[in-house]
Length: 517
Image (cartoon, rainbow, N blue to C red):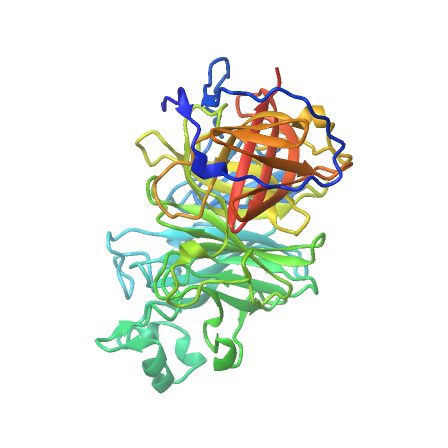
């Protein structure tokens, strides 16, 4: 368990606040606090338990029940997005999620067993990152997932079921990666391009797969666009994130015409982001009616506890891009990813937590029937282990249409439609800035005071803050970076009522937590 006592305020986080008040009726005359030492005395902490361990959770709701599906043939269900019950886990033929996947002929012809064309490194099965979608045309649940072998020899597959929890029956393979001249005939690549094209583009000198330009065929997620068309986004590290259309009538991918100008490959589809074997994986696209944007979530870093794993988001007005961040940019083939994408969450500690959350990533997202928006991800902990659990946080769109993720796991909170009184939101906050770095450092709280007269105070600094009257929207600025977000009253993870804010700017997320006296 981490000890967080008397952590001194760091001026690098909030130095130079200059926010302009926006319509708030504020009073003056408050006494400026002088003690900015961070102390957790009297704050109850809790280590909430999800009840399951599901890696790379992808969510779907059906008849009031939420299901998450994850790597290693794991899945769980919940009625409240907080407490989960396992419905299957592990590489066994009796796993109820699948209809005898391990014993089905041809599933692992290309990857996954000692008898495959490209045997796995450890001679075991690898079933990763499934995503389930309800196919409206067919009235069936489709699961898209991957089997994998070496770090880039992978195979996207699909299976179907008439109920969300399964069992899912394997139907076929969709996309292959990691092939060489010796193994390409074990794939369907030559059904779409000739061998000369494959040798020129997909296979490098030395008979190696061109992994820096073309994808590792894992981490598929499937979604409907605003016009009712189905798409699959996929990819991990290697050549980046790719997009292919799905034929709703068959569930199969539609291979496009080659278009070099728009970075479209006949077999693999359109590259949206990344490449050059930079860290980027776990893509998830969600269309939001409220903003009219498609949001592309991805994860950076290595998935281990100290690997800097974190969630980023980009957005686009069209399904096939361009997907850009808050600076209007996105990572290309050789760019340093850390500079691109709004960082939603990484490693952090907040009061109310028993230990820091680490390697928060590989998320899915959804908008519930009541309009609430949620991000579903897995997290590791600052406990020296690689154990992980799923977490679900509610998020809101700020006035500019960017996601602002609430600091704590959801517990049924509802934001005030007409905003909050100034006395409810003013006060002393524990504040963390997620930054944009990709490393093992944990974002620790500092103390920040929002005065009722609109002034902001911290150690060796002062500034102002503002909120939009009659709404939950707020704005702050530090240095030359403006942050826009929301206030929301909720419970911390020990069940204590708190006021929070979540604001974003310059690709960074800033969270604040205030305890009521």
